[in-house]
Length: 380
Ligand SMILES: NC(=O)c1ccc[n+]([C@@H]2O[C@H](COP(=O)([O-])OP(=O)(O)OC[C@H]3O[C@@H](n4cnc5c(N)ncnc54)[C@H](O)[C@@H]3O)[C@@H](O)[C@H]2O)c1
Image (cartoon, rainbow, N blue to C red; front, side):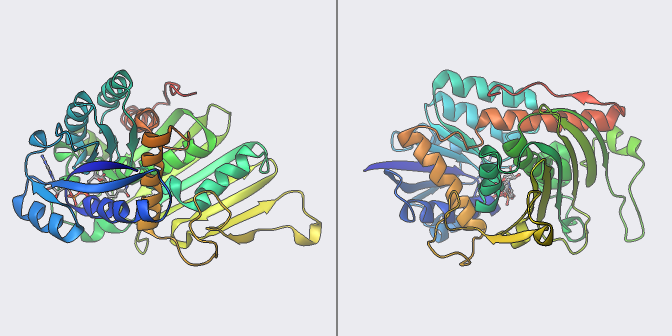
């Protein structure tokens, strides 16, 4: 069995999530490879040393440039703030490594474009951390669509809401400013729900958006939008409508000022033969309604996923599926793609480029007040 050595760059929140997932992924399914947590890199030596020891990495380092070309490294996993993603990914690709990169792939689609071209030229396997699409219930929605059981998609309504804006008030955290890599509520969390929508319905082709930054203080609302644009502030909330290439309609909202919502990715999809509803906070449950039911049975039914559904882990439903399990599923797909070839359900750099093109169009539409077209994705 082949052993894949990983160098992870960034030992913060996602560094921890990925470390846990790498530990679980190869022992919970047959992948044709084992995964060695070889080196954890963080430019803060105290973080690097303690995270590596706690999270089971063989070594730690502070300079990714000294690590990514090593012969015992097969995968470079980028968990840094987004403005470093392009530089690290291009160096890893140039060294012939497979690259897993956290989302957003970068904060600019022009950079993502360069990353896609480099990876294609080098023939390495890529994936971006759009983890929520791997939730068994979301994969089940995709299967119902592929099998024609939901008919033709008509309308997708997706939201991603958090209350973090009220409580994470440190202006020095990197997410707080565009200059340090912050992509706002739209790019940071809204991009996840855009990925889920494109996974289910295909390309978004045009958008019209409003984005807003919140003024400081408990009794303040949104800032004047000219201030957001002029000072290049991150957005704290926004909404956009869109059209899919299929003709389906989409509406989206993202906010980090949504009291009571801890981490709520929610969508509903109406189609010609039925509808589905998904809420990450009840992620084992999948709600589905079929048009073609006897009149006394019409309505939503709740299905517990995790057993016969794609990526299900357990032969017993109802055991629970958490953030780490879903993250492990994404690495199982990544490792299988390296060892056995692709399964087409993964968010590669090509998919992430398109999500970033949508997010760029959202930002442009919010600035100009006009509809903005999005180029067609390359896999379409
Ligand atoms: N998919 C998800 O569910 C999810 C959730 C949270 C964050 N993310 C993404 O993951 C990425 C990281 O976010 P996070 O929450 O882990 O941030 P974080 O601030 O918790 O961790 C980032 C780490 O990178 C380190 N770092 C910064 N510059 C570095 C450099 N030059 N070399 C090596 N290390 C460096 C920092 O010291 C820090 O420890 C971002 O792109 C973010 O959008 C994804």
